[in-house]
Image (cartoon, rainbow, N blue to C red; front, side):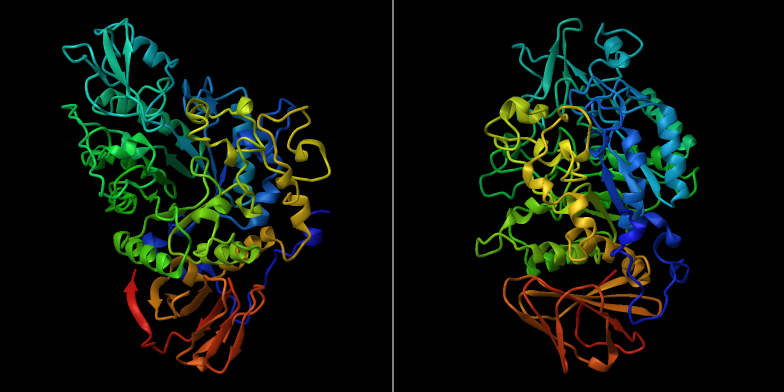
Length: 592
């Protein structure tokens, strides 16, 4: 059955005028598409295999572009597809200007880019500039001596007098010493992730020029954005001072679990350096020469990722956007939590530039977020994930949706769905069983429950096993079910495209009872009231002026309006069209 034949995701504009994005053209950053884009993150490894080798490829993404377009997203972000020995699933690169054989060819990429553009999908490519593979020609030359042409292209340091590493810096992956001895040079080199990923020396102008050359290669091909990996790692303290020890009562850095040795240090000197903010200026200067193209930075593993990510986007000389760890908290989701996050994010990103993530190739799946259990310790019901789709798509700023999260896939269990012998993630291999790694959120997409390997590959075995629990959530199962989570994401995404207030509107938090999150989004002459019951008990929201709020029906959330009361079942949502010519005294905080 084709998408067009059974398109429950097609949603008309409901009980309101036919809004056009052109009406909101003068929104943030001159109406730039990226400010409020919904970006679908794709790992070519795991999307679809078209050559039968068990690994996904660019041809698979091209084959499924109609599926991606059916979601209603604005752009796709491709994780690394470059030449690489694959020690870290492509984030260890040997040639930044070449498509790896595993994924196809440059012709395949150009075809994908052209067809995606014809379908009005933007294409963002991953750029890994903090480090290379230790097999990269640059590093092979740099390690050979202390006086070659590329001797200063990586971060090298002499040992202490006793022969030990230069300082106490730790690898963000391994939690062990971040320095590796190189016998040929008789020096240590820095690696912030794996020892096979030596850090480039961003204090060297030649390195920056080489990076910009490689960025220009992809910009000239016509990509719409560059996702910049680990941007807050680019510079280190040139004096190589030890990171201070963290006191026992100090808060953990964002994204670092309590049992990770990295949590023992304040991450002050090894990375997160303030001088990086000035050093990235040439990146913006280059990208500004390509109208409509944006940069998206990854800002994680720092003391305060929201605050730091905002710094990376301030003004017009840094990045266009940066994502942060605001939603990656290990505590149950509550209205109070969301209010705090919204207040902080909208304050820090006063001029825009925020990007939200929940699921990710590094951070697990949406279904595993917020402990997977409510404040009473009960697993979240299916209604919670439908409600969260509506909530996440109502937030100001951009949002990255990790492939498979629209299906509600759970994280694959290790051991269980994936045996210890099948672990591919180097982080997971090295630290198992204390840390299970990232393979659980990287398993192949389940396209159908009726074909071997879920329709992902014709090979006998895919590169990672596909859990049986994923088959019941396969695209084929959910596509024709109007009540499925997949179609909830489709429905809201397509509806959102016609709401300038959601794409560009100012957010104002509203007074509500304890378990209810309520806010308005207003742009020009459109206003929307967004109300979410984040609890397992019924709740209500009081409309100050019921005659000022036109109910938006058809998004398939349960609610009842009784006079000035909106009655919300557990984990439900309500949207209302507001007459913005009237003002509300319910506003308790205005943020932009």
